Length: 183
Image 1: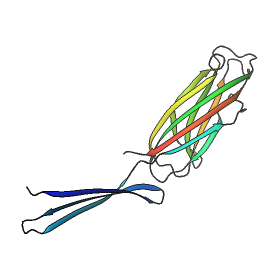
Image 2 (image 1 turned 90 degrees about the vertical axis):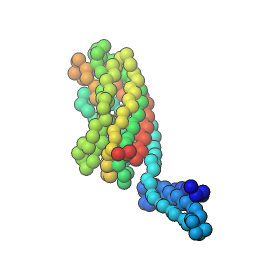
Image 3 (image 1 turned 120 degrees about the vertical axis):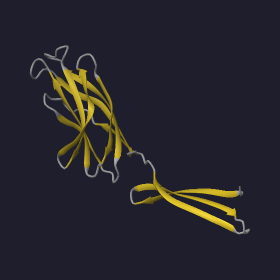
Image 4 (image 1 turned 180 degrees about the horizontal axis):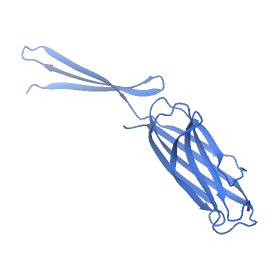
């Protein structure tokens, strides 16, 4: 039943590359002997730090019948991250010889560490070459330790007639958003 005063102080700090906040709660009151008492608690809380990588993919890459790397970027963070990846690609049919209605361009994204695949982003896209020249994908992976990783976007084409047509990248962009994992 005694009145009390309280104060909360929050300050943003940094320890290396991991951002955190120092939270201090101080409560003061007058006890039964008319003495002012002060209780203070302090804690450090990491907070989500957002990393954004946004790049254009240079035009001209040729899609082949076997998967090949279209784009790669290093993604190295000291804390576990959740990654959201968005990519938009526009393709150009340079030569439509023997391309059939169901011939398709596939794209797939993955994380690679020390030459081994750490994780795949799903779903893989499937885009008809002649009827849909735009490829869009938004995918997410949660709770990853990403020291020394590379994010890659791969692509390939499947055609009914082997070697049909020539398809290249007209334009493309990639956005990677990484935040501290909530687990």
